[in-house]
Image 1 (cartoon, rainbow, N blue to C red):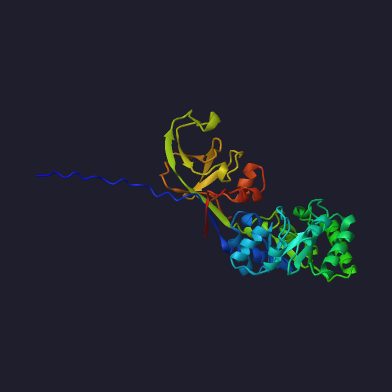
Image 2 (tube, helix red, strand yellow):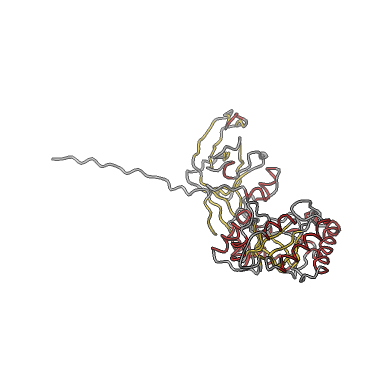
Length: 377
């Protein structure tokens, strides 16, 4: 008689990878809040991959909610939006790698120009179609805009470029250096400069351009800054730098528990042993670290949500993981923790993480690394 040995198959816990969910419904609500504050057109700015939330996802949600324009850093970002089938006007205003005029013109991508040299570089190229340009004027930032003493030269060169059929001036833009103060008096100098620039363009015999100055803070707090269009970027994903408006968080970052252990009092944890347990406790590991966007320097208040309860992040943040002190509760392998989520729940928000890291919410969401899976909620 032959005996049979039963071989048991190994059982694995199916661990979902760290995931950033983007919530289009929240983006739509934020655009609706912006629409309630302005009569101007709304440009949805989706640079930095839609503030870390996925540029195409954010753009589609914003357009569905009524945004008429899109804004990106460069031609490459804009081209990806066109490839995704988005047809609304798109403006790029940094283009650190330069501008391929023919490619931009054929894809109907507008380009901002902040100096005579930049405009000359565009005019030297050939294209069967005139490039749509926005003159970027310095209205108080001393950053990428054209200084006031060069406005006349830039406007004159733009007029010449139009005469030759090389460019078509369609927009005039500037930036508000103090809009986050939510004080119209602080914005007044930039508004005045923008009006002066617009007057100069008209006086040069050019058509009245679409003028835009305000970003999220100006959109929400100061109608005098709105002109013909506002640029709503951080606000799309729930960030109001002015702190004046309760917007809707548009993302949720989750990660699974990949290791749990009970430890005794006096146990040093992590590199350098900077955290030592005061009593016997349970520790759990999440597979996200500073390579995934978790700030390395955080306050002792930092926490995550597990099963409707907050638990502290302890010890140093590592490249690939963080340690959570769950006290008397042993958390099973594979349990989902929420690192941050929308307002109104138990989970921390991006504003909480910004406060714990001594930074701004923008750095939290734009810092989420490529190892984190992106999904749409």
